[in-house]
Image 1: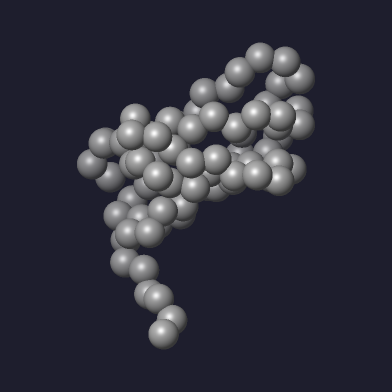
Image 2: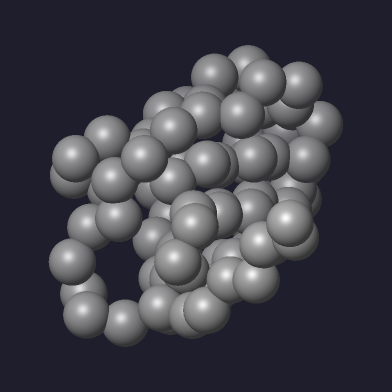
Length: 77
């Protein structure tokens, strides 16, 4: 919500077994994404989950911005 990068967020792409983490610049790289329309989820404690449908081509790279809003998180225990 502030427009600043969110470091150390978890980035999951449907169809990819291993999630990635964002760096200090808020960017993450996910390799070996099968082509097609995939759901991308970004999560980090203290923020609401970001989710987007992203089209991945058979070749090339995709850049997509997902903004996270600050939020409260309830932890069990």
